Length: 309
Image (cartoon, rainbow, N blue to C red; front, top):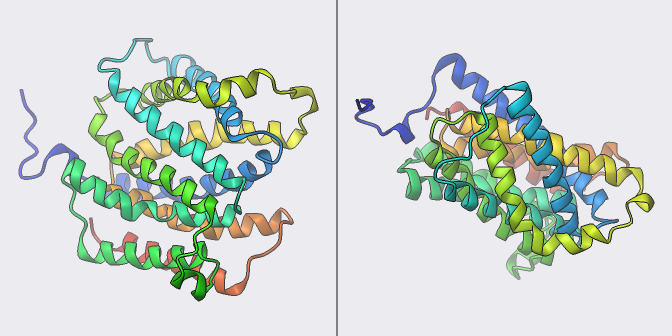
């Protein structure tokens, strides 16, 4: 018997009331945790290449999600139907993670975080193509305002650099990953088959690993783990447990209850949180003009969050 969701399709129905509030709170937490991944990832890439580092964290993520899925949540172990869904999602996440770490070898966590904030506008476009989700004019205005603030941060508040389109190599590398992640978010909803969120996250992680073997296996096998400083181990644990396992569950939860544009709209808070974290870690505080750009992205988020779906 088919479920009647007319006049909207299942992909276009959004949560109301308490469920909607919890989805927004989930994405606020997501933004805080993601900000930490840029700062801690930047520390780790000083001692290990992007390929082996990403593979290492995902191998650990598979273990963590496996324990959560089949131990804590007691989900029965079944190989997923239509496994091609997870092959696609795993490939998109692999590119995103590899480009993030690679970009951090060339540019700062603040700049990569600013590139990340371009994702909601891209995601809104992909959600329209893949799910038929329409972005309201007010929400679109919020996305554009926040994107302008992100551009200001990416170009380091340098009008001359903007006019010359002087984009750094790291920012260009990470933009490729951001496009992949922007496609990934609406695909979570499109590819969902009412699986447990834990099981869904586990199989995404499992199918991410094969994509990472070529760029990371050789470097990981030959790595001298004994000589790695504690910060690398701590960073990998944070990235594997917090910004892979936990943020996936938050993203999956919110993606099923909010429009894709609003879900990733919380990424607009990332530069502000990164600036705060970088300062607290003793890496220096950003300039006031750059901070103004980060705050502009936050204002764009506020406008977008207050508007109806």
